[in-house]
Length: 138
Ligand code: NI
Image (cartoon, rainbow, N blue to C red; front, side, top):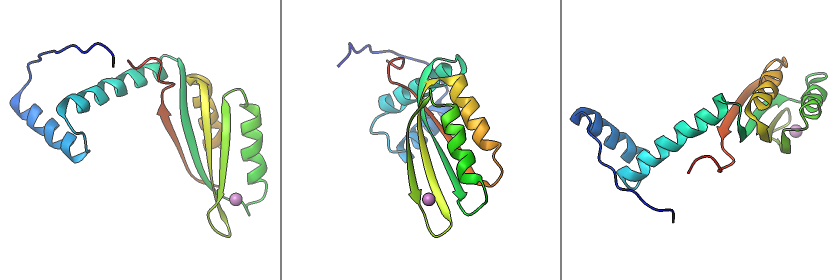
């Protein structure tokens, strides 16, 4: 484990009480773990906004019967092949497919891919889970 530092901070009682309740609801075992998660979330956000090397997952749900849609989704992934690590395709039912595109690379390029997929008509839902390669988050 990395060297641990003990810190002391001052904050309003109400804020601490609300934070502790929320951290408990979210399942954090200790206040320290909850605060570390918040700090890391902030660092990940900085990586994304600073166009750093990041990782993530784009999830899309679409109806594969819609003419040309499957080809468009595939074309986009080829066009952005430098940031596409892997794609998992699940046939949800007779019509709908769930595709999870694992991405890694410059944040700006990944966001362009997510936007390009968002522009494809007929995709029912599209999310971008923004995470880190793990190197910049302590
Ligand atoms: Ni399918």
